[in-house]
Image (cartoon, rainbow, N blue to C red; front, top):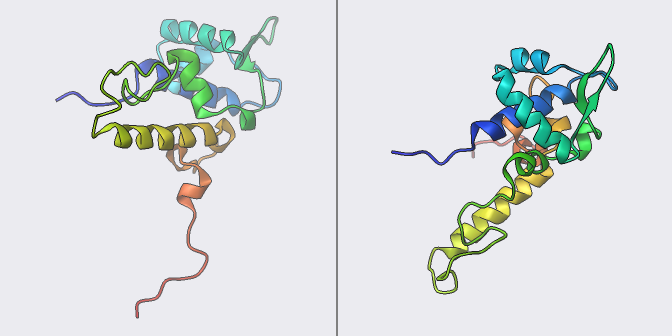
Length: 157
């Protein structure tokens, strides 16, 4: 059975940008450093970094301390930004993407489920910033609201 999952390209792009988000401000990291730290094939990562540069998420820094660094503060780069930089627009199904290329979406009984799933996914991806993913207990990328604990203890009655 096939799984519905993100591509390695997306996974590696997220690992690389999170790695760069962990760097001290202004410090650049080499492709070799990122590849080794994040267990990403170096040649594949070089291509991914180029996509991230073209999307305006990563900058190339030349010189003795050259390499790559984020183009913006990690709090202004979303999970969605990174995914779309390497894969293009996100769509759970053909009927809910930017292209909406399904001829039966108006009469399809499943359309509302796909549309709601798309809405929730996009909301989560847009709200999750790289700055939230750099700590040791980043909560697997969940937005803080998704991991909040009740403010009052729950008691059995």
